[in-house]
Length: 246
Image 1 (cartoon, rainbow, N blue to C red):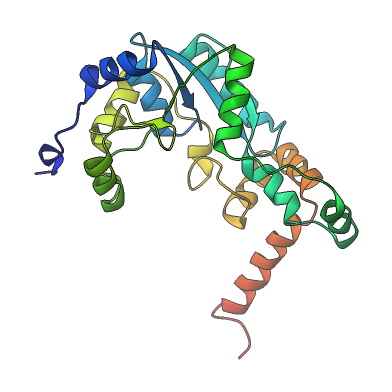
Image 2 (image 1 turned 180 degrees about the horizontal axis):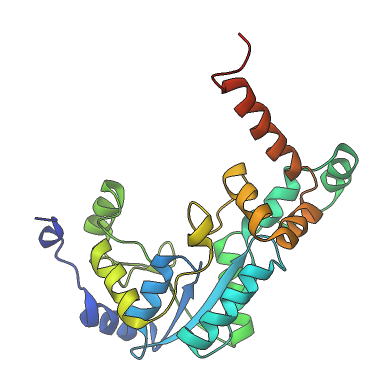
């Protein structure tokens, strides 16, 4: 037993109908290119108008632009809006991977601080949307115990945090089956990264440098000392190697 029977909230078409009754026939979808967001789009396709947007962490990465173009054609039939990820500005405010002189300039600059609500407002302005609209997310009750308890307590439509979970009741097996049946491919990230791009640790930078060297250089244009992360990893491996001197 998965425990989903203990959650009495609406699901499937009934949940979509409940959302449409409360918020109309459009929904935003924060599209990360990951399997969960792909599954959300498949679950909503032909049932409600979707307005997809992508949180751009580093603009201009070729492998991301190519995959977004693919999903525009194969999944949405419309443009996926590119919006700055709130963490993009936070990186510069915090001086992430910045040389000293550049970090000093950034510290003196008036760098804006954005959050999810700010990005949603940008989307609404671009789309000419008035009133309240929520973002569809790929949160599932069976992801972990915290999400299970959250869905059980608050339901799948959560206006206080601005989102709703159309596939909250899907198992991972169903999610993967739906993607396979659709013929829609997962992004290239899944073939060489731990998951879809989610940060700039060596776990992402090393395979990116090997597979997409131009994109790695693009990241280093914005975060010059990202190369030091690779050096840190190399030194760490040397120190922890069985052959390292005692």
